Every structure is written in structure tokens, then in C-alpha cells.
Length: 612
Image (cartoon, rainbow, N blue to C red; front, side, top):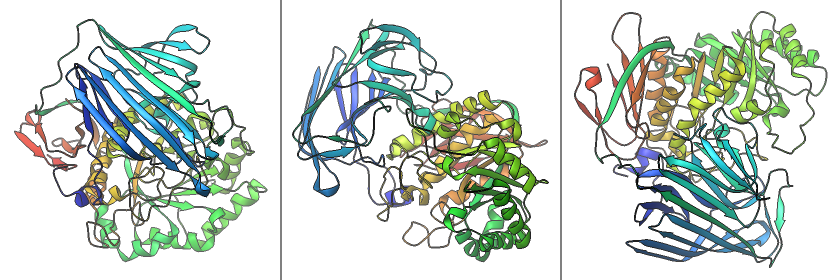
């Protein structure tokens, strides 16, 4: 990083710098024992090869590496190390890894694990990530464990289940004249479409999900797995882009209106919001999204708190209402409606979702008991006859893709995303933005032109559909499934937020919610952050900018390198185009603004800049 880490990411902890491994045209970044950004001739072949150990809540262990040796010569490299994971009840899993790469385009990653005692895990083994840019919908050849070979395609729209099972190898074209075969030994592998969770990859992983989990690795029983990558090059590798070349912007034609911007409000946040009404007015959200959950004791007091804020800050309001489904639906929802009236809360809309739908149902698992959604919606219509009704999933697109709600009974659909379900490093979080257009395209393919809302979506995870709870994170580390994330307080979150809005703008959303007002998901700082307590976090400026652009016609704005800079542009009925730029990297980036009649701009790390 070229700037203060605390200002950029809300923590002084700096991620380990990757070690670049090179052998001829083959290169890879070695990070914390795994490989990232595997390239051939400057072209990304695989996004990652990683040996992953998960706990019973799908949290990822951070193994401690010892005896690390890295050797590199002109035409080959090798890495070896030992590692161990400390599980509950003093259980321990140790493993030995070796990595070898050659200029002939061959890469081998081998791991032998040996638990000292019985070791419980949801997954232990390799994950291979294929990138999505340029690969989505492209032809691949799949070899199965029975030896059969099938010519097929990677899914273009997001597959709710596993597109390929019983995998032994998968071969794809990298560029004309270049192909890559990834071979997996030591267990049965299958692929899932990680774009479901906004990961920018297709993930091939060990141990089919249809098998029970968690499971136990028996003490003293070795487990060995090997991943082999073989790149075939006919001498047509493309030259890499020239380093330092400015990022150019290209403007297209106006499209759908940019969405209303909402903020999520929890009952415990109301008093702080009321105490900071001038800042809320300056922020200017068009919508307030009130979270109501009777399973957490919410009742009349929570609704009265929401009513006080709605009266103090006039805006459209939606009640995000959890339905317990514990008894008669009409009785439950009528009681909620009665309390809403008693509280004096004026609502523009209500979104309802059964509580059980907040938990994921993975492939091979039994669906939990849940009343028919048609019955839930009918009861909600009877209880709230005069306002708009929505549903989808209060969790993520994954769950909506797997349980497709009867949208013809709704006025709008909704879902969230979270970028730290599987990985929480800076690069993975920013790369998650690549998957968002495919999420919105897949949603539109399922639900057509139905009014569509996204959020609240933040870097931190507000609920964990895949385990018992989110991960507490008092130290403010970068960890997957954390209930708070330090980057939300830094410039990082502001850049991610503008990038998010830019990626989903072509979908013509009705509403986009990317923050709260207070709390770990909010726009106001708490103690120990780069900004003083109670003052605006950097994300405040990003959300304010989006609020100001709401209703403008979206203007397609493409950059020449969307891994570095994303652009969101809007145009009023009369006037000039307004644009927000976001630097997605921890380095300075030079931007060519000639498309806007301006010169060059140097964007500092994770900067957001308004142009026009």
C-alpha cells in the first residue's frame, strides 16, 4: 500500500505481500500458503489454488506456516512448507505442502495432511477457482471420476446447484492457441457457481456436499491430495498490458433511472439517528428500511422507535418483517399490522420473509418446514392491504436462486449480497464486484421486469445463513463471515460502494441499500476508527453521492481496466453528465478523462472522485 493503512482499511494490520513466482511465461502469487492469480503470458488462467480447512460453521482456519522454503530460478520455482490448524478441544491438523512450477507450463500443488487426533471439519482440501471474466458461458471439457469425458460449457447465468460433479479434470481455453487442464487427485471433486455469493469465480472443491458434514478426519490417518495444472501453448500468448497506461473512460447512451438509495435502520439505532438528524438530512436517503424481527424480541417498542424516526425524517419507508410462522399466519401478521397502527408508523411498503428462509439449504439437504409462500403473501396482503408487498430473500442471491419465490404475487423482489462469505482479503472483496452484473442478469432472467431491490449489502455480514452465527470480530481483523469489518470505516468501503452501484446500475433497480446510518454497517464512526466518533466515515460521501444521483438516467460508463477503476454516470433531463469514479486498488491510478473533455487525473488508493 502507498498510503496509511488505517485510513485506507480501518486497521493498521497490513496484509502479507504476495511473493511472485515465475517460470518462463508461467507466474503465480504465493500468499499465506496458497496460490493466487495464476497467469500464463500475462493472462489469468486460474484465480486460485488453495488448500482450505473449514470449521463446523464454515469458518476458515488460518494455518500457521513453518519451515517455509522458496526456490526460484529462470525456468522453474518450488515452494515447501509445513502448516497446522488448531481446532476445538485441543484437536490439531498438520499438513505438509509442496508447489512446483516449470517454464513448460506445468504446475503441481501437493498436500499431505495428518491429524494428531480426530479432527472435525466441514471441508478439508483443495479449492480451485476459475475466473469468470471471459470464461462465463465458454466451452470446457470435463473428465469425470469414471473416466468419461464430456464437452460442455460453463454456465452463463448463475447455476443454483453444482454444474459439474464427480470431477477428475477440467480443461478450458485461455485464449486462442492456449488451453489449460486442471487435474485433481486424492478425492472426489465437484464445482459450484460461486457467483451465487458474489465471488468472481467458479469453485471446484473437494468432498461432495451431498455427503454429511461436519465430518471427522480420523487420528493418524493420512490424507493426500494433488492438483496439477498443465498449460498448452501454441506460441500465441498475448502481450500483457503496458504497466502505467492510463485507464480510459468510454461513455455510452442513457439507460434506466438510477435507483432510490436506502439505509437500513435497526431499533437500537434510532436514538442515535434522531440525535444526528442534520447528518441524516445531509446524507439524503430516499428510503428508510426498518428491520423488524420478533424472534429477537421486537414488538411495539421497536415500531414506536421507527415511527419517531419516520416522523422526524420524511422519506419512503419499508418494514423488513421476519415472519415466525409459528402459528396462524393471519393472526401473526394482523398483530404486526395492529402494532404498526398503534405505533403511528406510516409505511410505504412491507417485505415479508419466513424466519426459516434466513438459513441456507445446501445441495443434498432437506428443506426445512415452511408454510407455502403463497399463504404468507396472502396473509400479508390481508394485514397490509394498502401498501406494496415484497419478498425474495433477506439473505443472499444464493438462497433466492435456490428457492425462487412466486413473484407474480409480489410488487417487488429483494435480496442481499455479502463479499466475505468465503474469503475476506482485500483482493477477493474487490473482485466480488465482477460478479454483480451476472447476479442481476440472472435475477432478471428468473423474474423478468418485476421491480427489483438489492440490499442491505455491506462488506460485513449481518447474518450467517450457513452456520449458527456470524463471526465476532472485536480485534477488527479481515475474517470471513465477520459481523463487523474494519474496512467499513476506511476509504476501502467508499470505493467498494461506488463500485457496487456502478456494477448494478444497468439492471434498473428500484432501490439500492449499501449501508445503515449508525452501527457497524453505518455511515457514522465509532470509537477507535480513522474518523472521530460520531463523524462521517468515508462511506458517508459515497452514499451521499449515490443519493444525489437517484433518479438520474444511468449513462453507460466503461473503463479500459475495470479491475482498477469503475465509473458510475448519470444524466439529468437537462444538464451535463455527472460521474463518480472509484479506485479499487491500493495504488495510485492514472485516469484519462478526455471522454469528458478533461485531462488526466491521478486517483490515490481507494479514492472516490466526483467528475462533472
